[in-house]
Image (tube, rainbow over all chains, first blue to last red; front, side):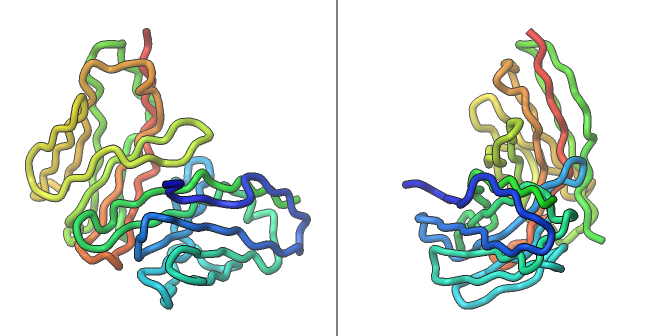
Amino acid sequence: NAGVTQTPKFQVLKTGQSMTLQCAQDMNHNSMYWYRQDPGMGLRLIYYSASEGTTDKGEVPNGYNVSRLNKREFSLRLESAAPSQTSVYFCASSPVGTGANEQYFGPGTRLTVT
Amino acid sequence: QKEVEQNSGPLSVPEGAIASLNCTYSDRGSQSFFWYRQYSGKSPELIMSIYSNGDKEDGRFTAQLNKASQYVSLLIRDSQPSDSATYLCAGAGYSSASKIIFGSGTRLSIRP
């Protein structure tokens, strides 16, 4: 099992450019999440998908969109990147039932917007 | 605002000693709690989950939960240099659709 995978690992964008961060999990988990992590701010939830076909806003959704493509894949799109979106982005997934909310994280994408 | 509070540290502990990490939470509706370890430049890794009041032990790790005091702790016995990392505390409701609230983490340093 690869667990949770994310692409790309690193990305540099210019202000105004767009990009999509990809996430996939092979653990048959129902729920998937996108977080950003900034120094001193901890993990902040951007969007989450409790199950295939549903998405909901988290704490900091402005400037982002998401797509739950199928049960395995959950993508995060920046339509017009801004320097404030420079951060490390983590995707996570969690099962339902026993162990619900135990989240398993991907390796992260380090994004710099200049 | 539902919050999970942790001392940012750094907490410095000698090798072989017990490291004690603490966390408080404001939402009385929180039912499940988690400790994640995050090495510098890496992603968070789940190390303990606790759902009931009391202690839960797993190897050198013990998680403690006191819902009346809204307090969660993690004890690491026989601390090793490899335990040096940032430890994130998190809380959530029972529902699988619940959002987890993370603390900002405590940086732990184990000195040889």
